[in-house]
Image (tube, rainbow, N blue to C red):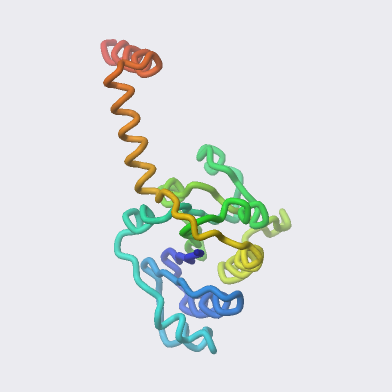
Length: 198
């Protein structure tokens, strides 16, 4: 199931337009993290007003995202610091192959998108192929393109591990590797000890 998560949108009309886009493509799950919602939002939502009324607020983004099987970050920029994230950079069409279980798709601020720490919470990043002359889209248009691509995807009801489950598993595996003195862990520990002793 797809959940659209809006992060600190500052233009109230955009929130309304996005509610309308969700209804256009048959989606219902809208989440708001520190977004500005006013009467203007309800005007631009038009016949999707009820989706905006049902939209739920997020208090803590990190703990909220830990409940999902897949967390997707969106960006209009693929160069710069993004290349250091070592996460797959997908097109909306490629993203379709990864959609299983409960999926949160984050759309960031109109002026500078998602912060690095928010992108780090994501499993994959999505960029819509656009002209190099003007690569950044309005956030409501980006939501429309991505939801259009995903609307043809058939999802299964199979229960999958959440992001929180995966973090627990990684922590337990790390503890186990320490406990059995796994060679790669020992080498890293010895290397860190040598650096610290200088």
